[in-house]
Amino acid sequence: MNDVCILVVESDILIRGPLAAFLRECGYRVIEAASGDEAQQFFASDNCIDVVLVDADAADELGGFVLAKWVRTHHPGVEVTLAGTLSKSVEAARDLCKDGPALNKPYDHHAIHDHIKQLLAARARNKQ
Amino acid sequence: MVPVPLDGADNPVRVLVVEDEALIRLLISDELREAGFTVIEASHAEEALTYIASGGAVDLVFTDVMMPGAMDGLSLARQLLASYPSIPVIITSATLRPPPDGMPGIFVQKPYSADRVIALILATLGRDPSRTSHE
Image (cartoon, rainbow over all chains, first blue to last red; front, side):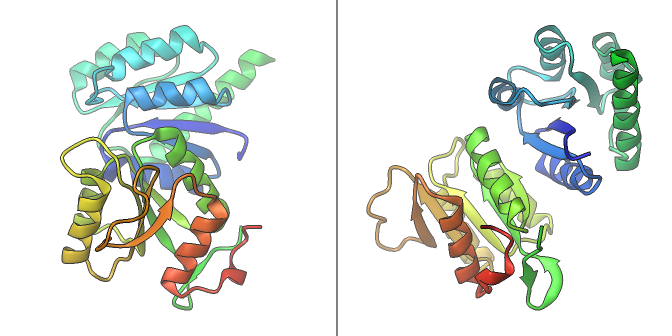
């Protein structure tokens, strides 16, 4: 899975760090962004991002929802999953995501891994 | 990948990288991971302190100086020296030259090479450079 790259966008280091470490142990290449602005910088420099996990409550000006929509618009081949603490926000986020349900916080790392695998499998099927 | 041992244990050395420039942070973090270190990434000084104060295990902090927020890298290093004296700090900057007296840590000038940073980390922690996988 080393060729699969996950971009984790999360402003809280105590959430982002352990999640990124877990996904690396699962074999993914993981890029950590502390804000939507940082995430956009990575897209500008790295065209190999496969999946984006976005905190719906991202604290910076861009915000999780806007970033998710931006990714869907400018990088339609990239899978986007929104996560957040507010169920209402998560419900709204589903409109912005192509596949599957949004994820609730606190993160269940194994559930996220399963979700990523489902996204990648669906994408592989669509490419066939 | 050959993990860098810590005190003879199987645990790799844990380096907290504090850098607000996302692409620079990614670059050095990837290089350190390739060399076998466990890397925690912080985008600013307050985030680094939050991680350490929460009990996050760190063997060494590698921090930039110029960062947004109330605390820059030098303030972070001084805070760590006062509150966590067992955690060594390596400070990097493109603008500080030469490093001022009383630098609360080891200094490496930007731009730096990954090899230089890795060598400094290992020397600071008294590690054997031959134990890393970095070429």
